[in-house]
Image (cartoon, rainbow, N blue to C red; front, side, top):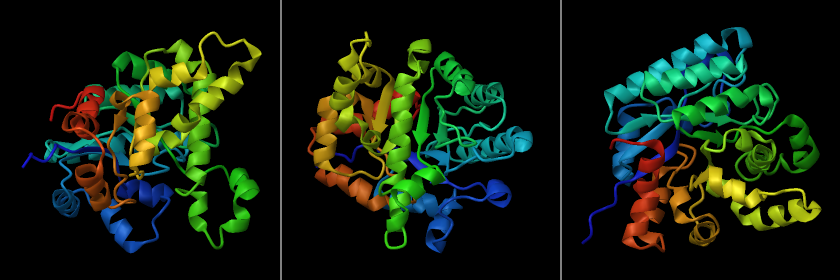
Length: 322
């Protein structure tokens, strides 16, 4: 019997107690979910072991530090990252970390905090959640973060948060009383994060920093399925020397977080290549067992390709030492 592949999951969340006290968090309703978000020790490790997850890359849950007051954002965010570094130090073979960034203050502070987390704390990149002070992250005020990420050769992971209220009101409000998940994982998250992905490609930031590495979860928030059509429609005016699809395939990686479908994965492999796809679960919003059951029992991949998906691609991109 073949040995179980080593499993790295890299969109796995927690909540920081100080940020809960200062700014609150989305999703703190279900007590069982809250218990898992607040745990960075025995319970989390027990559930990882039971499901066969060997290593989690931890990230502060949405909206993370992106709605903090500008005058305290840097200090509070540094505290978040220092506490997370202590967790990783206590369990270096089980946990890695993506930095939270103080995006409501000057972007140079956010870039400096990214550098501190990578060079001093050993973090493997940063995670950003939705809008920052109501602004998409393609705005030029945030470009210093892309510049620093490129210089450090670490990825920026763009994760959903609650969409802009105007979007919710215009698109979803009528159905939310019966189907509240439409505002988040069922559709709202995809609307916002796929839109950000498109804006990042079109903004010029990928021309300014062509080696920057970006990650989208949930099998790319649907964008791999639309690349051909977006590319075709945008190129009709004949003004784009390099197409949308080429830029996306050059700068983006995607993960399987909360999206355990063989058919969808097969399409993404054909469209962007297996080397740009990494396994993730989205714990604890998605429990570990369905993710690892799919990964270990249901994937239509060779043993070598499973290794790439489940650990090899993440090890290369994040420079993991496990």
